[in-house]
Image 1 (cartoon, helix red, strand yellow):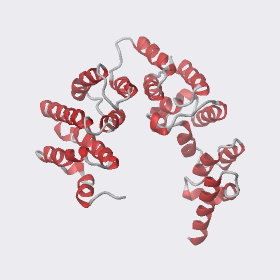
Image 2: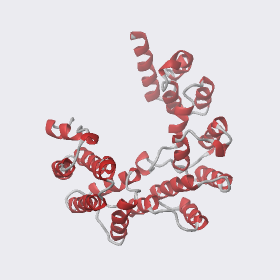
Image 3: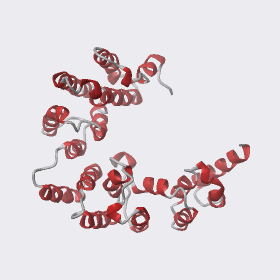
Amino acid sequence: MGFDEKFETLRKTKLHLLKGEQWEAYDAAMSPYLLDPRPDVRAAAVERLMMAVLGVSWHELRNDAERVRNRTRWLLARIEATQVFHDDVMPEFLRQLRWHGKDDVFLSELLPWLDRIAAMTVPGVPPALVEGARILLLPLADDPADQIACWSALLDHHADWVRGCAARRLGGAMDEDSAQHLIDLVAAKEIEQPGIAGSFCSDWVEADDFEHWGGREPFVEWLFALLERRRGRLPSWKNIPFNDIDFYLHELCAHSPVQVQRMIDGGFLELAYMTATEDRSKVADMLPLIEVLASCSDADVACAANTFIAGLVKD
């Protein structure tokens, strides 16, 4: 079901074009949708308000710190008040904080609020989401070694979200001296209990920087080794704050039929299909492998591969 016309128009507002008092007008127009009966509308409203208050407007309002703080306080109050009626609003806000709020002017409001929420029992709000947000937002301690030790210990936390957030901070704090130790530590933890290696390396993949692994190809081999060796339950994507390693593999290997074949041989059929069809310019090279997947044992993958091939014929 799509969104109604009024909300869709508001949702598609080009936030970067707003100026002056238009920011508060947008906030006021969007915030009632936090109480909408539909969960997807509420989630979209949370995302748009966070982008407006904690994201895009910052480029225009950075010289008016008090106004920024006022809007941040307003948003926190709205999220807290709405949670009384819909217990999915604050969890969505906490999840989305992984993309926002790292500047000091936001932290001065967000961190005390998170501390207060952590000290409460808020129905519908998993404590792991609050702890994860605090992990991601807290500035690096004066003693980085102590901070790294704290995050490292959290790789054994019972909550997958907390483990992923700690792994993200470890990856961002990694330097030449700590790199090999942290890479080995995260690899061992990923094999034992999957779900953290993608978060750990996400900053480096986004920067296209694989120096700590010895280059792009050794990094891809590191990912493959984890994929093939890890055991146990892979958390739901909703419980992983950043991408899993399969996401990076499907992007980094989209040029290589050899690596797609390795995925097929390892039984990672969905990943193989995603990788083989990622780059349209490489379809000719991948077609024999897509044909193999079209007759594989995974019915969903086989159906997708057949549909893909039929689309090529139609084109």
